[in-house]
Length: 373
Image (cartoon, rainbow, N blue to C red; front, side):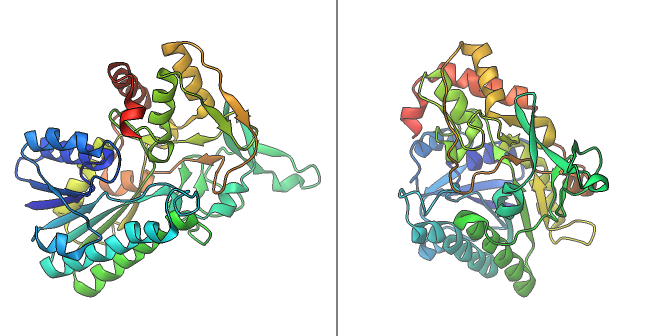
């Protein structure tokens, strides 16, 4: 089976390619990358040493795809991953849409032409911002956790920690996290909209032209060799910055770093992606859209990451700034139970192993942020 992985020299693409190669000897893996992300070229030699063919090309150009096909499956790992893309002055809104949506259209046209299946790696940032930004939270063990208003005593507006699968004033949140049923209504940021629109187009193309489509909404990816920018993975950025004694800052909310994210190693995606490709078209018992994350067990606040770093490398002062940034959220943890019940999928790399892997790599590569960012 011939597979094309886009963005293969990025962190997620390269780790997924290596995991798939190690798991299934029958796969013929090819990849395409435009090497626009600093440091991405460092992964090419490692991939090619494993027998994975890497082509320098740009999926925004249909002719670059026409020159390398056909394939049985396309796994789309290419994207501008920043929620601030298009509004931070570092990239334009047009660049964001061309990167994340225009390229998806080219890939779907290629799937139609080759009769290939399509796996889209999407994001937790497709979920609606206002209800998540308005969550009532409390600080527990140096991290935010959401609260549920006690409707039986509205006069005192008492709150208590969620203890069952009740919603937090909106459908789709439980103690396990945010589920696939949570609202995707605007606003979700330009980045979130580009991925959400890509999801819908993928589903429509698959239905209209009769090829299989799977959409995997991922939490924060983390692991060694991840590039040293906060928009490409706050876990790796925080650890590398601490190791290199760079300036760090808690931004927004209470200015104390209590905001929480979960994390997932990209290699843990491989078993499910293999199942999805083997299954072909989704059946009723196999929903086409899934959350894939480390879940609540992997969730950590910036303050908790700081504690971990201090234990490993010693203290580092962290500045505080309570002024919020656009699209920041206090608590984003994805619930992956649908993937577990329908596919038997579970993340297998615990958060402690992920952090240790990043830290060991940081010790061996003490200038990684300068190299990769």
